[in-house]
Length: 111
Length: 127
Image (cartoon, rainbow over all chains, first blue to last red; front, side):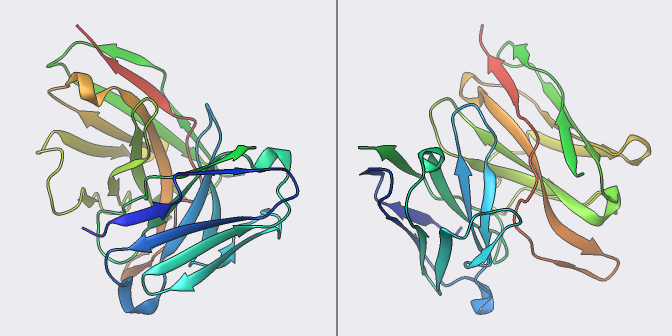
């Protein structure tokens, strides 16, 4: 089973600042296809897909969200945080080998 | 538009079973896997398994985490997938989500993330 470790656990920032979230995999994702996704979840809501393939924004996702990385190390960057961006973010690997594991989440909270 | 609509909240006693439904619309039902993900109160997301509605194939990962307690089925006539969890324990209390995953073809699939999610179904297990 591929284990995804996210850091930090909580990020305290102010609107307008940038956020950098990390996701590290316990083994290289399959054939360097980088089947790594990022999701945003707000209280009481289902997760929303932000990024797939490590760096491709999903439909309708603002360009202040960007993903990068390959192999075992991946990053989600949120530029100029808006009030609606304060939420919990999860990474997930989905194409290497099941189970499609999630990281434990990073909470981005208002400072 | 793509929608996944799940059945309502359930309260069950330990040892009982629960069956949650997920009705798909807005796309060709047989063309995408449906995954199940759960989230215990205050906790993170836990992937449970997927079903290919085209051929009934299911996968819950190699570790048998749920020890054979999961059954996934589908009714193509109403574009609905079901997950049944048996021998419920208090630690199964969670919100259960269905989510669309891989695009499937007759001879293979495209690996895709979970792009559309149901609204979630709260299952409470308590004596």
